[in-house]
Image (cartoon, rainbow, N blue to C red; front, side):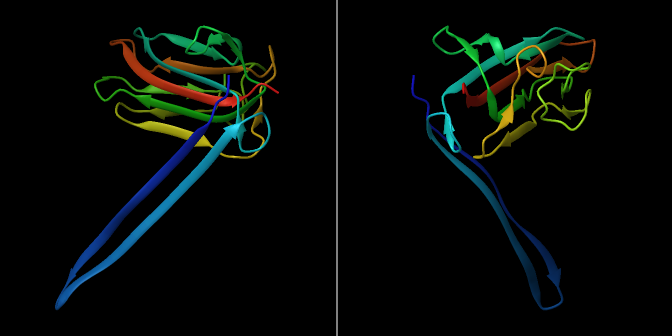
Length: 167
């Protein structure tokens, strides 16, 4: 099935300072946009996984990019290259979500070292994407992304979108 996507991350704003005879302003803006057509090369996609997931208190799950995730139509997905990862922690969560490269030699190398990761507090979003050839996903040795509920008191909900290619 063909997959196309436009991914945009944008920040715009203005910092001001009141001076004696006026107001100084510093407008700032940064936008990153990646446009993908259908296929398996640079700037192309042919696989997408999107879901809203819930983790029980202290629970951890591994998102296996080599065959256990299902697409929106129920077909198993195998990523060979990862091109984008988006995780949004629900604003109503009381705990943070931890995203990491799992211990051992099984994690997708989106972080520098084994067990490296990031904390996503409630209401925050992590976005990683680009139009290059992507990061290699290798079945059984580099195919997992670990998502963990950071506390043992409440469930957490998160949205996830993963995009990439099968070849």
